[in-house]
Amino acid sequence: MAKVLFICGKARMRSPTAAQVAAEVFGVKADYAGLSKDADEPMTPEHLEWADLIVVMERRQVSRLKGLFGAVPAGKKVVSLGIADKYAFMQPELVELLEAKLPAVLTRVGG
Image (cartoon, rainbow, N blue to C red; front, side, top):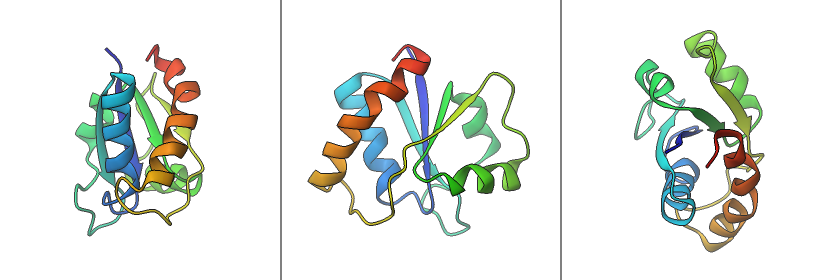
């Protein structure tokens, strides 16, 4: 089963929602983390090792991820969903957006 890590800034709204939608709707193993120092679930190297696919909410987070952790481990793909930080946890519009975007992303790991 595919293991997908969702990353946003503080791991409060978008990435936890994405992890829940991915697990419940698409049946993948999902986790989440945040890149900010005050994230609810701070990003660690172990998160990177665990994941088959790394999904960030915004393109700029790819650079931030590499700045904090160096090169992404070999064989790991990083994809940006292009979802702005304007949604609440499990907000219906966010869930709908994720349900529309995730199928194409999850095919990258056989999800």
